Image (tube, rainbow, N blue to C red; front, top):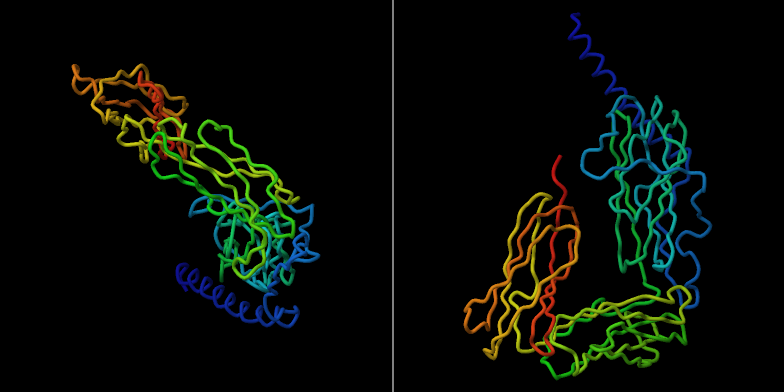
Length: 401
């Protein structure tokens, strides 16, 4: 037998051995471990919100250390299959049941090495930063069991949530495994809508909209709601009493927000700071945006930078026009940001009428910003419209290596 034929024969024998070990391993895990009859879904009942439902008694050990994780599709740490090890999970899908969004919940994935050689965990990669995997060791001898501890953080989430975790091992028969975590998250305090948006409001007119805030216990109250922009927005708290929502009895508080008649023409944005008597969520904020229209008209009202890379040059234009045809002056243009090296210039379309101006924004991207959001302030000599604000948006990416 020549060396090439011998090498191919040995590789084929190894793979046939791995398949045989896989079959025996499944039988071994089934005989040596108790498999639950299914996932135990737990529903939060009124008055029991403080319990850790869906995982009673389960706490991730303090001694475990994080498994290395990397973003991207091709993990560099994974060295590839090299051994007749077999990672067999007792369950590949685990559910937390119904939980509140107040505290992280630990779950466990039990597995066993049913192969004939040591199993090495090379890399564990979660699909989301809200899901943190941990283990106390990475090598498991034949017949040894282990547990992958996973902590799921439900904060800021609502409704059905699914996350997956990918595990890379040294197994020849199945080097990559994917396991799944399911959860149904209920906010302890539910706010609708997430952002209160006013349509365009004419100068001198008012408009009113409402946030609805739902609590889970009898006597839930919004004790205070404030804004730093009291010249533009007024706030009132109204008790909505007990209501039924999505099949549950909840307690409703209404935060009524009014765009005041005295609001100056501009794009307005503020945060409403809310205080409640709910111990698990005593303080949070809600966003309000709106636009008051006067004589000056901005086009566009939002400046989109798009996707740019550090080093890219850009140029954008905005027009500012008097709807009444009255001439005006632009005194200055400024913006505070650290990601753009930009110059701002303004010139009238008709130097004699001066009722319409073209504003140019040109420069270079000098720093990355995954979610670039800045304000451009245009200062004029028009009464009550001294400052016009343009929101600038974009995704500024680092330069490729």
